[in-house]
Image 1 (cartoon, chains in turn green, brown):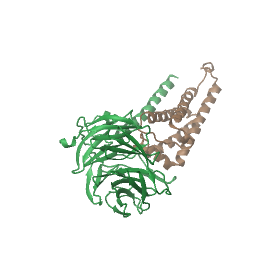
Image 2 (tube, rainbow over the protein chains, first blue to last red):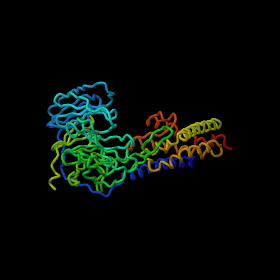
Image 3 (cartoon, one colour):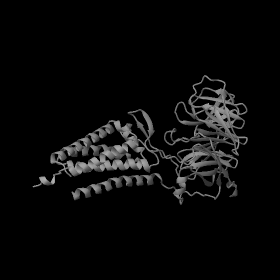
Image 4 (tube, rainbow over the protein chains, first blue to last red):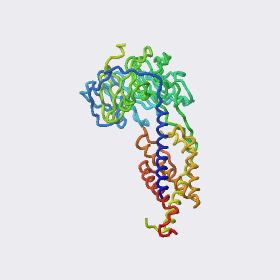
Length: 349
Length: 146
């Protein structure tokens, strides 16, 4: 009897211990450190107010004329305009002239005095003026696209899905001439050209910025899609860490292991690229990574790293998106719109 | 403990059968859709590095334990092994629920329909059965002893 109690007890410890050891070793493999070093100048970004929006379905559509514009995923035709002081809040309803399209999840982008409503899986693009929020159909055919960033009132940058290869492809659409150009070779394929070239498309100062999601790089191109430079972020993930698997029995391709996201979300403002990285650098306390999203700032003019700052979690939650407007950073976190003041630290170097 | 020898014997048999049924069912549903199972293990935050070997080891272990449980002479080893495996499964679910960055999905058949908390309760019910089996196996009431 005694022997049985002892043995059962030992087996309990062994079973629990072996699983716990497996977990700890796997966590260590996943969270490996890279030999790069971040700089955190003090007080770069300080929280300065927040606004309860009541819903967590808002996303950033753009910023112009002292206002930021929020789209709403569950009410796609609704726009919320909030001034940078977060004092005035106005809601608008978009009117689309042509209504006989297979609308599913229309998305909104605002640039200057113009807005763009689009859905790349149909595909269609409406545009109109912010003054009256009336949109008319500009594009209703062509390649499918999955992201859009306006360049000016009649040009938009898109990330196409190439019809013949299914791979990601950057393009620019001329909404007046209904024509498009495609930047073959801008995105560099590492193994499949679809998953490995995933990233986030931005336009700043009429230049196109494409920030890879799974590797330490971005592509900077002119609005003619001529390559300006391939830039690097400070982490060391040059090759996408991803394994794909075909589940033939159920007929789909999916991740064989969780993909290693390097750049989670990003934003652009003027000559700066702001990247929310997921990779802790050397000599960094991991505690900050558990309480804040870390933003690395790069100068697009010379591909230099300017420094980093944290955007703190709210009630344990990370922000889901952010934009930079003048000396403010705005972020969406759950139901909240949170504002940070940004010090011009980059120019002090 | 007041339990007659036949009652103890019957309880152990019942527990062994329940474990055999569970393990054979679990192993069969994993083998039946092996690709899916391996893929799901790979997405588990605990196992992605070892998915290939674990995907084979788990159903093989389940079948071996069922064999041990099926033979009366080997039953006690089977009970120890079954208990240990259940402890490991339970620890795995507990860690996934409490410490993992995200919660994956990887079980087959009817268990696929359970959520992780239901699964934890299911396991917590099966684990003590193993202990009971271990202690009742070759149990003889004191009065019966020569």
